[in-house]
Image (cartoon, rainbow, N blue to C red; front, side, top):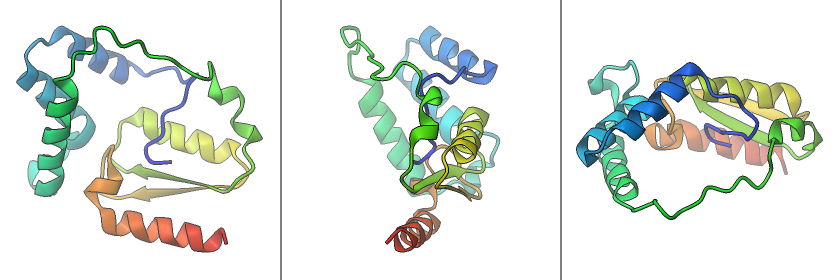
Length: 150
């Protein structure tokens, strides 16, 4: 699970403010900049962010935010997964970026405390997409977990 979200989680003021701001913006460049700054840049110096990750993120945001979603309805399959996570018995690897939004760091810790066979790894100097921001460490964590799970 990479920077996992979970149904039943009550969003922080930070997430609520971000969502309100995103809804208020009409121009695509403004929305892309907001999303990039919120999910990737965070409080970090721009020079510390991998240029390939930045380009990939801008392209993904452009593609995703260009789609007309006015007729798409979001559906939650499980109303409140938080109430059911203790039932998970499989080994689970949770990976967060150290600079991620506080909600996702807290969700990772909650999952770790509630799932008996969970492991949590944190990638330093990464935000919400640690698998893209530092794929070398991500792959090391993943391979180590998979080898232990055999």
